[in-house]
Image (cartoon, rainbow, N blue to C red; front, side, top):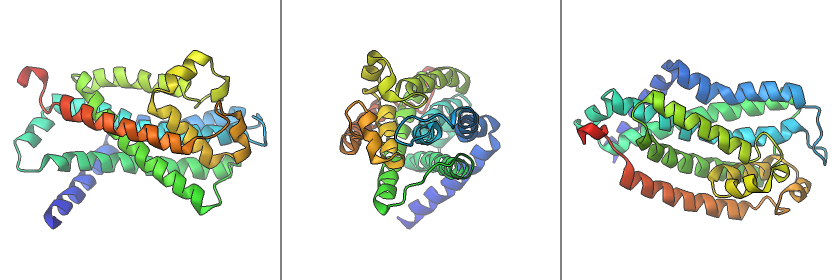
Amino acid sequence: MTRLFSLYLSRAKWEIRLLLRNKRAVMFSMLLPIFLLVIFGSVFNNRELGGGVTFAQYFVAGLLASGLLYSSFQQLAIAIPEERSNGTLKRIVGSPMPRSVYFAGKFAASSFIYFFQVVALLGIGHFSYGITLPTSPELWLDFAWISVLGLIVSSLLGIAFSTFAKDGQSASALAAPLVLFFQFTSGVYFVYANLPRWMQDVATIFPLKWMAQAMRGVFLPRSFARVEVAHSFELPKAALILGVWTVIGALLCRFTFRWLPKDQD
């Protein structure tokens, strides 16, 4: 067990170093949400959404939820096909290293990206756009479980999605528009209750809607819950649906993940 933990730790350090050397990953996975906050926060910060909630306060909750997709789903959906096509996964299969070590390293890198985004978004948001941070331990505990569960489900779905692309370039073309679609339909850029009904119905199927809604339950006042479609932030329901998606993601990974390209299976 000690040796396995040491392997996990070493792989985590390796994956983080590898990540920081990848300019594309740094730009689109780590820095993009921060750029979006600066741009949209600067333009729309004075816009009131009701109940004393500014656009920036609403937007940062959605960006934190989006950060879970950027750091895990999008990052893994692109990185894994790239490593499958360049032979990295083939070398891992042929090595004595337990395969779980590879996934542990990827999850550590995703967690590193997300932690960076959280610190940057909350720091810039608070000091530049007057975003109010949670003051009670209960809200921070909610933030913790939303983040951990969101990272797990997004990572599993990213690993499963990586099967659909033959290399990193094609994976980027598939994953990036999908993430953008989820953002527009899940209440990240617009107040969710103001979206067309069909968008709301589609969004309720997927995890980002529930991650964003749960984040709003942490960063927005309770009085703003009346603006939600259900007149509640529905944190227990969000936890349940994310739990279901975790099981779905795990099953998809188990039965669809490939270590080798199709022509080498």
